Length: 93
Image (cartoon, rainbow, N blue to C red; front, side, top):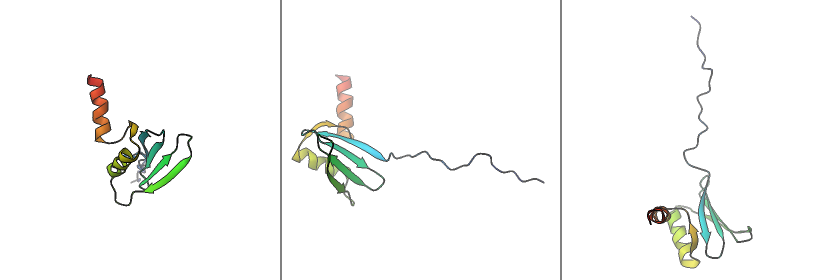
């Protein structure tokens, strides 16, 4: 009896979690980007230069967002429950 060989490789390349998540833009015009692969957040100034790299090391992303809220404030927050709720509220109004 001949053996059957699958013609399609069964390895999925679909990622459940994106590699990068846009966190938002702070009041100073800086952009914040979360790299999920190595749990790192990058902050870029308004001119696009990297200001700093923040390794999460067990700290929640929401704690980082709260830090930016206290230090600079957000012009356009796009990550987290509060940002989601704000966008829904804007649609309802």
